[in-house]
Image (cartoon, rainbow, N blue to C red; front, side, top):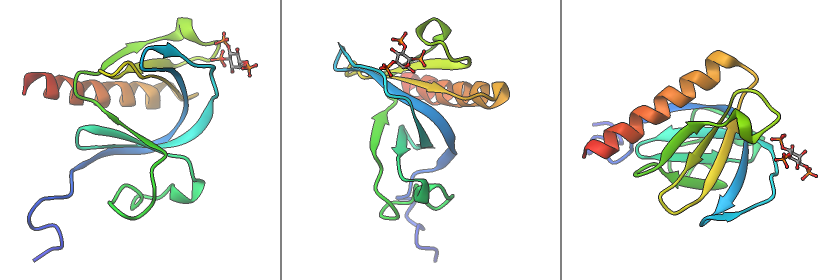
Length: 128
Ligand code: I3P
């Protein structure tokens, strides 16, 4: 049988490189600090990796590399936020705990695909 025959490894939905900045922590505003981040959508979580070495398809697997941080998408809110940045293609993700992130890509199709996929996960969790 496969190593995951019991289905304990959550499904990888999407992974890729986005620009990221955290703008609030528990509702408290933070100073922006944009950085490229390897973003992995797996199960109910969005996981961020800082290390460029982590940028491979196996990165998300438990134990393969250490995430910088992880966001629970249950109860999260997503909105386009081009008013919050001088950059184009920016959306804001707000967690139920009041952490806020901006995510951005220069590639229109890519950022739209991320928005759609994250919103689908949020919608799925809302219905549970
Ligand atoms: C910020 C930096 C950010 C910029 C932000 C600036 O300056 O230039 O890139 O956000 O604009 O304050 P600093 O490096 O001195 O902190 P955007 O790139 O998203 O526009 P803001 O203050 O209008 O958010």
